[in-house]
Length: 108
Length: 113
Image 1 (cartoon, rainbow over the protein chains, first blue to last red):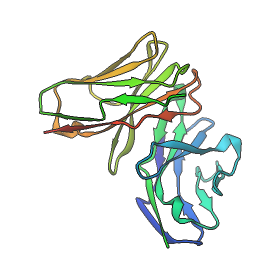
Image 2 (image 1 turned 135 degrees about the vertical axis):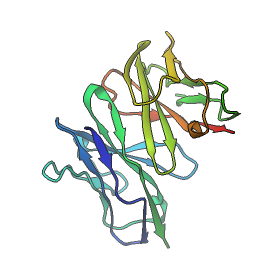
Image 3 (image 1 turned 45 degrees about the horizontal axis):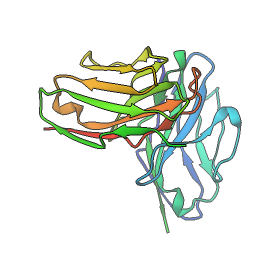
């Protein structure tokens, strides 16, 4: 079965603290993973994709095939990072599977 | 370049009615996919169209259907509405067949009373 799990519904951290949003996936093939973000009153948008190995807004995510994880990390959280974050897997036939999302709340 | 446009923004219907939602993709994008978003469930994939053909379908009942026109605009129809169909319906478009990057619309908020 192809599935994405985000175990935390809500994650609260203080400004300047490190943040890690967890994502685990289930997929028998070679996974393609993404993080999408939805800021308040904005559209859902792509944050980063594992294939690009990029850092966007200070966020990075490393694909760990052994642990089937794709956790999103940022060393120093900012208040403007507060948003809803969705991990997504592109599986068979280019079908996307999204996790249930984690709400990140960065407190001042 | 205009983004993905979904109409209407809000809909209120009663049980048993049917509803049609519309999505206009970004110009040049040929793939359109639909998702149901509910609190706690995240985004659930409904279906995807590419060049007027349904390529993928999620695990939703047959009451949910869609189509895509030659100009890539897409419509989604839900018949015999149920209370549980209340959700935000999101449409996403992408450039080609590989669907690498999805561009989302603002969604249509459907309330079923």
